[in-house]
Image (cartoon, rainbow over all chains, first blue to last red):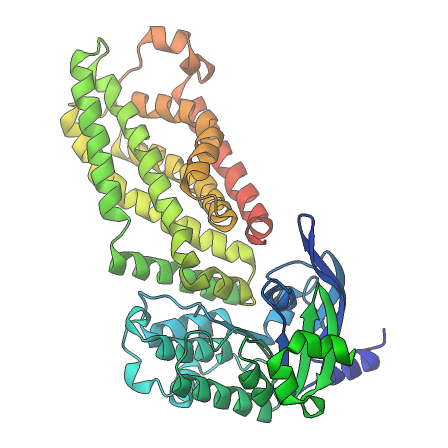
Length: 247
Length: 237
């Protein structure tokens, strides 16, 4: 592939999933999934428990290897060029991935080092201000409330200014105020050209955040539509039937 | 190289700070070690063997089990809040994580030995027949061997969710070959080994203090490199 074509692809699709299949022992969780996501898109992935939402995100992140198919992040193969691919990726989930015995600032400082962030102190101050954690910066992560911990998790995921943010059930356990804060943070990230792929069981919240909806059912992708083409009420009532009906 | 060193230092310091703040491993290791020394000291009163010959054996038993505690903990902290995923998502070579964790485990075991070895010397009335540097060398070789295998298997066990029992079974089985020269070397540091012990049984395969040291060096080199190379495969899925 020519260098010009490669650059063009990197600009076109930030996340490029081609024919990805994944099985755990005899159970197939993902079956030849194809997804292409461009810069500035927010994709809401929904499906019932066990539909493969988290498996898809973990495969995109490189935490799980695909049995077949390929995943590229910003043009870099997750399987063959993982360090370059990971440099463009941030991940949040309902678990914070931060160390409870370290303070907020120590956690962020640790991750800035791992990601080789330049001007780390300025970046940490900026993030603390963005997620409104400045007054808690010397508190241990272990004593933070669920909402504050999720804000720290977001700061951790954004510490290296990633192009892609994967969010696996990020609203789980958050109160309404924290959910709104998180939604605003995701919107700001997308407005600045970032790409978000997220899963949530809160379909209203998912539709409100996203510009595109994907439904996984029985290991297959059964719907992939822009949010504006979705009838929110029908979708919210039973999105699996909605997905099957539309397809 | 600079990035490797920065990542290595960050993971190492994070683990050291986490351990000294939580104080979960070292106190447990010390209590376990003291208990083992005490039990062996009581047993030595009724055994026909020389008390000074039981001491080094008690020490290796203490190092093995206390080492397992430290190694198990080294990845248990990463499991909390899925921190291991946070590490694996960073654009660093997985080997860096292994080497940093290995160094932490070696240091934890060294601190433990600084407390337990003097206690054993007093309890078993041990006297050094070689220099203290030789003793430190033998202990360090043992530390590296125990920690290299234990660190890798701790990661495997934590991720396969089989937890503690599997760690003990796998690590102890792999360490068995090193325990023979390690025991020989420590017995030699704390006194002459009776000729009948050298001539027969497991210790006869070692032959001399020098060959015991050589075996431990080779074991350490092979397992540090092998575990470092295998670590990336071990922690995925």
